[in-house]
Length: 452
Image (tube, rainbow, N blue to C red; front, side):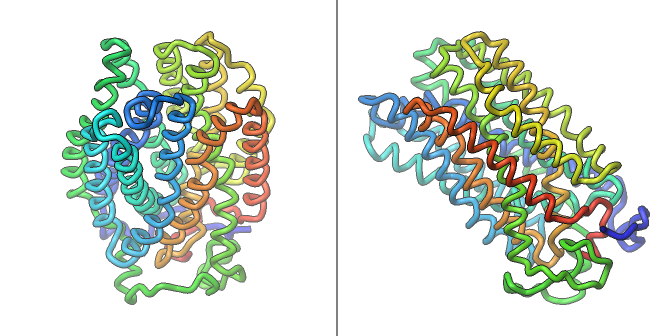
């Protein structure tokens, strides 16, 4: 059990950064993440059109699989970005890394928008797309790791779950913007125009949003928790087998955690696995499935997905606030059990009628929101400040790369050989893994990050 803690913020934190400055930094961080996730999600939204433009169309099914494989490769590079930028963040600060990753994502997005098609340069288009997505994945790994450290560190202790939920609000929000724009583009333009050049619009627009986000992030304040730790001593890398203070075992301040850090990393990987598999199934793949397998109209699939994601987005801070009252464990348990039971039935109810996708996606995404809202707070409460970002970068990115980014590809692969139920079964198994991992992790609600 985690010992009871005083809900007052430490005086030193209040002296360094005022409440108003914290909220300004929170907005800057969240808006930047929102735009990065919009750029990232645009690829999934326009996957069928990118497949037609960047791969050999002699086999359309193979082209779609290739596009989803490139989507997955972007995730496979994320652990490297999480480790590299995580180490930089723990040494040089959160703010510098978040500005750098913002620039990299924006440049990569513009490059996708301007990339010549397969018809123009042949295989070079496919290779170029792969390389650009690898750059995006590298930057995204660093951005996600740093944001998952930064926001909990600047949050009031008694509201950390609610503030930390904004990391996932940005994920849902970026996807919503991408789907809204996709719906508008497909409404205004003929399908042939979307296939020829319309799909490029979201990637180019991302550059303009990035300029605004960079302006906001320049005014962000560095995490005072990082500054305090950095002032105490130079941050040095700690071996994965080295025990660290507090956090994982729920010990009091100054106690030694009997679990090695690599065990904590493995538990976080397991805890995130079901969350990320369910999230990417229901936010990135399900509309493609409805269009390509069930014959749903593009407009219908896009707009009902937007509605479902908006409802899920609204639920996120409510789940986060609930966790600040009842604890992290009960909320994660609800997700794992509910998603494990409903994953296969919800996918089975989708037909060519948009309302079926609306009902299934809304239920699924509200359940996913329960777990997604807590990832940032739980991960930050497990790892110590001196290694927080690099630990999160490794654990979170490995789990998302292995179980989330690959979900659309795996689902489509099994669908193509008439074994779609296996993909649903995999999500169920991963939800069970989330349940077990969360059972082994401590309840960390209200823990003082300075003592972790």
